[in-house]
Length: 141
Image (cartoon, rainbow, N blue to C red; front, side, top):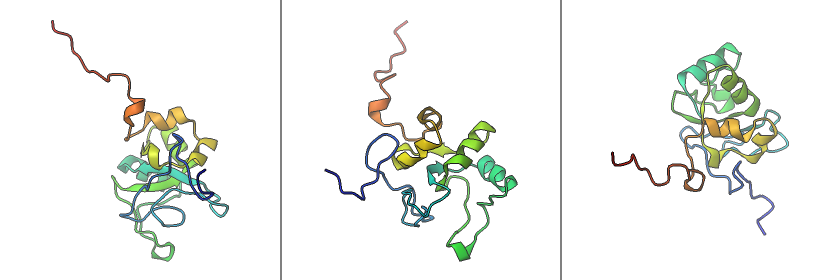
């Protein structure tokens, strides 16, 4: 039996850390775990892009500006950050998606975002899921 505090990712495995530089997570422990205080469900481990950051800013969610009072460093493209599942989905639908680290995305994100949507932006496709093209062959002739 797993310990009661053992968190799961969207693939059903143990939740892996999302990012520690900058230190992410609703609880700022580097992982996208979610608890009762996390009303926004900061559960998607995103690799943010410039387009994603700009779109969030336009929506009033400025992730690029440091907010020391919230222990928030401000993000740059390429940073990994636990983002609110609904905001991630909104950005995807608007054509400004952020990449997703599936192993570090909390299972709770699936309450908001379909797994197919997360997979469509995955940057960490585990070997067991990439059975297509397992043996690349271009043919001989």
